[in-house]
Image (cartoon, rainbow, N blue to C red; front, top):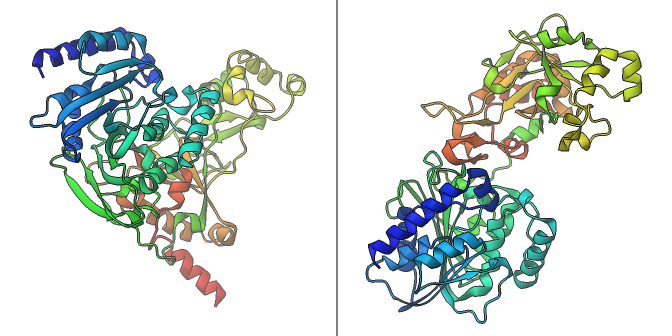
Length: 511
């Protein structure tokens, strides 16, 4: 291939990116693949191919980065057919200006296309990364029906568009065809990823997953952690090894591990690999969920409207009858133990209060005219927000009791391997927003922990001393190294040693 064609392609891609803002491209899932990345993905993909000819497909072709990368490979098999689908008219015109011959650019929605025959033996794709809330319900249902009828796999409505692309492409694949998909690594962790994982384990032979280091963004304008998934259209009922690699390059990864397919079928979080070993599924190992119920903090619908500092409360003349103390966001709270004053309010420099009233507006106007006047300032703006509209009274909040322990569920972690999340011991009556996870003792332990605060403090200390890998391996990682853990994931964290004081107390009481 002439370097001039690739240079022309890069120029066209830059012009397209420059003409569209980031939000526009995010809505359409348009994140162009860097050519250097396309080259190493193409090289490994072709190495898996057992054929003297290439019949190529790129379901979301863009300007043709993967086709260009395959063409540039030395000693590759002959390309006898090449198809590329692209739904964006402007991108199609640019691609056709670049590729006046070679690859056939088809201006169509790939999810609606059906092949004449299973002729493709090499598929490489960076499918559109469009989140589920940007997809129309009828479009989701249409794609779900096709996948259910062809593969017998149900796809969750929370799935991103890339999941549909991967599964709908199956009908294009010839026997032993090689597929490579550059996708967000989140499918390996989230519940909706179960459909993709079932496909990879039951319908094809999964060869390898390479996960790029999330601390090093592969796309300048997409805050996602990326992975490449390779598989061969060769389903088998037998067990076989699957390669997991991480960091570095595809040819020279920083970490490597080989696992049997049978182990992957029972492991729900594949991003554990290759850094971590398979789980030791021992029932005697206590987990956070064994002692605590983990709930997300409240979502107000508009924190800036419903959460007020003391100065604003005083200026508006608001009363504490309908105000609840609330903990500041994690970035404004630099302590891990939150003490309380004689009224149970948190001892912090700038206390915050949440408006929470369940009275109808006509009673508020009579009993609390100062609150009524303030709420009127939110009519038509705050009241029309999605979460507020869904409430019985748009200004009423979710009900949460103060939690004795909170967890900051997003973070990057400090240098030296420190955990990215903090556990906060809460002595106050303050509740928290959904910037925190709230840990409530289960009924069997509630009385013991309430009457023995030293035990709760020892547990809190144990949680903060958990190895970072215990937490990170249960959570998920996003582009730039941002780490996050959801309520159910936090519940799965193994806490060997952390609950020992509670176990001893219960044994003593029983004796």
